[in-house]
Length: 161
Image 1 (cartoon, rainbow, N blue to C red):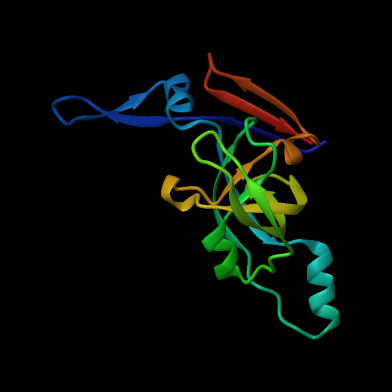
Image 2 (tube, rainbow, N blue to C red):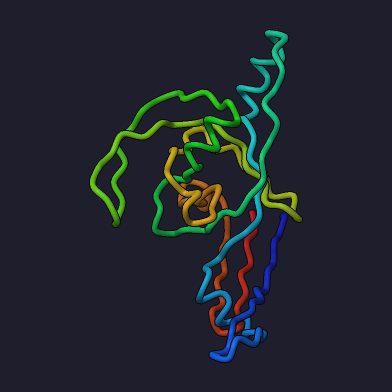
């Protein structure tokens, strides 16, 4: 069973401008459970492209927020377009911050950097995530295959699949 264990660290700034280390619990509180990921085209689509003699889009890396409030995994829409991912559907997406909007759906494969945890996400929804410094949100469709332990007291998460 692949396991990822992370204890967060962070830095803050005092009123006089000095940079100081913050406790792991505060780092996790401030930034949330963020992991580094690599995203590429879902395996079923890579097989099709290779059979047709086409080249594969190169994978991209970035940060993902583990978001138990998101029912579906999301990828930054502009990053998905730049990667050349095919939009396989359009869906209505509603979030806590905005009304329902139409968004593209992309087939992706996501690997968490530093672990063998790799999951096919056949229906990842495009969203504007770059403004938050994110490439993706890891939603409950991904997490349904995992065990997630969030320890706010120690500033640690453990994810296994």
